[in-house]
Image (cartoon, rainbow over the protein chains, first blue to last red):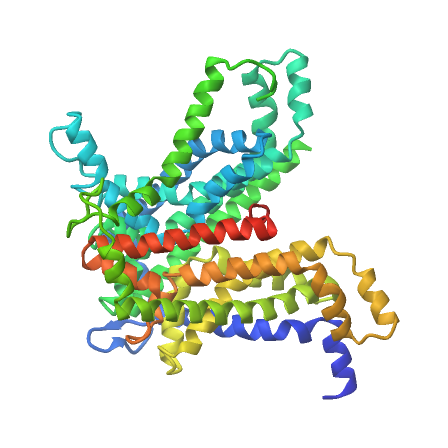
Length: 289
Length: 267
């Protein structure tokens, strides 16, 4: 290695960055890029990836009614989960952000705990709660509220309940962080000047916690629409969303071209959501200042 | 909440009750799994009927579960060590050096956080099949480095942002070479970020299913994937027992990490 090259590698930080760059290239960037040509090949039964080029895999996704159903279901599920985590999570986030007792850190840990616990274990807990002979149906039957078990699993209800639980901690932690940055003085000043609680909430807390709320919402949305484990376990083998359909195309049907095309559609949805929220939050910040 | 001296108004009681219900909802599946693991029936029942530890005995003497735990720990350790080394080097470069296209490089490092995991999984499956190393342990380690390194870089960079690098420069001026100055001066200062990043990395790697499930060979299977496939074959109390073991270990881990570095600050 010449001396000038060595100096440049050191000063530019490229020398320190390159080992990680090589790993990312081999274990993320190249694999994703190489999948694109696959999505443009036809599927040949028995062989897998066929010869020649075609747009058929994408055309199918945009014209087939089954794909439409699965994509709309995934979008609807992710959107519902996002709304439920906002409704359920924000009051808890506010409580924890403004709490002054020493127990606060331990309550925050109670929110973090399910987040750290393995996803399969949490989904299994929901199977035990929601299934036909699960705890919820047992309790409702024994107190006589229902006469026969409710269908709470292998459908949209089960997916939304389970995923709301699984992604709630993200929303709580992000909104909590953003409320903590609002000085308590600001609320007290408004209260002293005669604002009631509703007014304080809508004119101070809500607008100033928008950044946390927005990043929480986008995170919950993209995590919900990309989730594989929970939809697979709570949706069963037949009630499918985009990610479980990709799983089946690759692992069961061995139709890699169609699976690759669907994977790019999912990626596109995620990127569009991130891009759109980025634009919205820029405008919102400009509006505030 | 504005006036802490105020008496307990009905609204405030209702609010505290609401918070308690939500916290209970968050822990509910955990409680249910632990309860089910003690049941003396061959099917899942809550509350447990009878009281037995035989499901724990069954799981802990099952060689398949033991080898799955071994694979998971080995994989998580390898991925965490490599992530820490590469991630710290990259963070240092991004903060201290004039890296060309620094913003683009940071986004590329962080991208696996928001990229759908299932897409990364199938892309890796295809890539490794193509170059003929599918199922090799090394492919798992590399993939896990890619998905854990964002956590390391995030923790380390946030600690580095509050670090006074003039001390490192002083060490260099006094004659220490770059590596010695980093090892003796900077490394102790960024220790909390390293520990938090390492803990996150270990958990993320240990828990991962959506990428791992596409890359496993038949002989080496990780614990979460083993539980996942066991559930697909039908639920019974032995799954509740192995899940409860994970619950106890995760709980102990969290308490330990909180005492050690104040884990909640890094979440």
